[in-house]
Image (cartoon, rainbow, N blue to C red; front, side, top):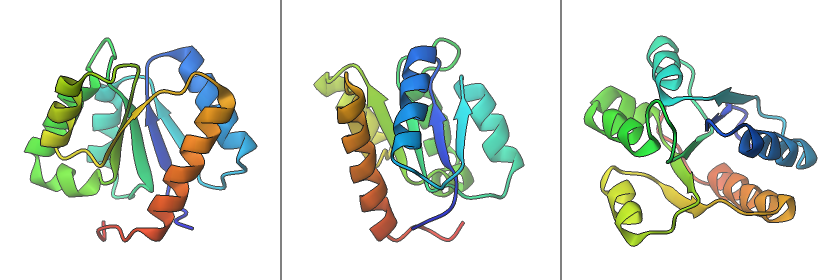
Length: 138
C-alpha cells in the first residue's frame, strides 16, 4: 500500500473526529494530516516536496471553500499534478456542484456518510482503489 500521508481538509470538528475514528478503526498505517481550512493546506503543499496518497476535501468551508481551493490548484500546473488524487466529500449531491468539481479535475465526489460504518466502508473502498491505481511521480 502507498505509505504517503492522507490529507483531510475540513473545518467541521465533528466530521474530523468521525473521520479520524474511522481511519483508526481501519488500522490505516498512513499518517493522517488534517487541515481545518484550505489556506493552511495551500501553505503546506507549496512548502513541501512530500507527495500524498490522496486528499479528502470538504466543499463547504468558511475561510476558503473547497471548490475555490480546487480551482486554485487546477489553475496552477505544478500544484495540479502534486494534488492528485483530490477527492471531494460533501453533504450536497447537487448536480451543478458535481459538474463544477469535475470541471476542475477532481478525481472523486462523494456524499458524506451519516454513520461511522458507512464512512469506514467508503474510506476502505477509496484506500483499496488508490492503492491499486498508479500515481504521478511527485
